[in-house]
Length: 81
Figure 1 (cartoon, rainbow, N blue to C red):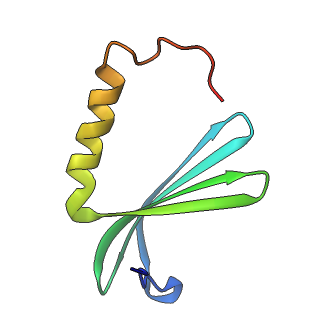
Figure 2: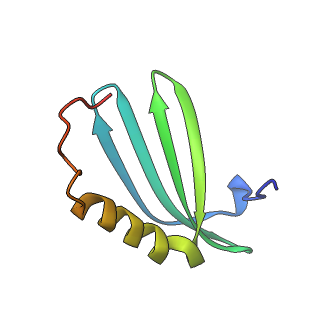
């Protein structure tokens, strides 16, 4: 299913940028006529991949990240790609 988040009708509520080595992550919390969405874009040497997380899934998404970060295996490996 293709999401129709038109660039002209989006209102950016908040933005963050995270740099990790050769990767840059852009987090944009946006609102448009269809609702709110967190747009996460990864830029690696000009190649971009994007995912959209709808507002209603953000709590579950944040909870999952917290569980991962708090797991025994988190941070055990120093071999980050």
